Image (cartoon, rainbow, N blue to C red; front, side, top):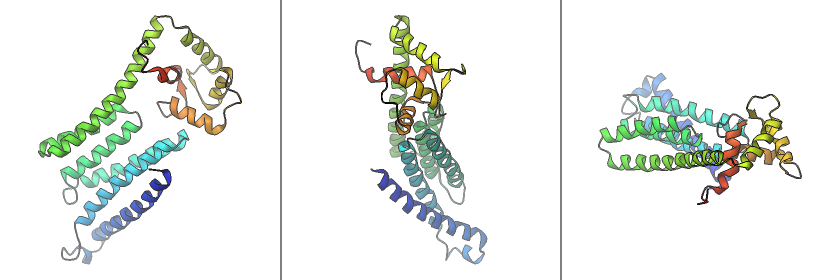
Length: 250
């Protein structure tokens, strides 16, 4: 799905969510509207369902964002919105356990996209427990499939770390050369490089012509695992060797 399609879906879902939310607020404030013969309680549940769908669209849009600062801001906005929706799903008059599990699963997906695997596991397990308590075998299967995919993603990172340690034990010269170059441009000795320092490092490594601002943002997006607009040598080295992850000789 293209970004254009995602933005179109975002606009449609936001309109639907806002309408359902307005009806819910009206129900809370208007005594006449609280008449059960007038108000449809499914409106509140529909707000939760639509909000979860909107959160998924916003997650995908955040993933496609090449500007690290903007991507981080987008993630925070989705988390804040999902926390509101999670509270609604836990309300005895509005929500239901299965709706809560759906929101928790979406929270897990969001944190997994953000490379925060402990937080993702926390929300996945909460969703799994709800489905198990309610004997919802379909929900259990769905969550387990997502959790297995997350484990594979974590294993890939673990594989890179193991290869890094193996190369270090073998006295890998390439790593030492890259470390020397990294240290040269880490002028403040913070142990991290920002975008400006990375630009200088890239030129030192033979990148010509110099990287454009868009190319720098794209490279940082791939290297920066902490989404803090800077990266450590370990993050750089993991990126540097990641294209060789399937090499059986490594």
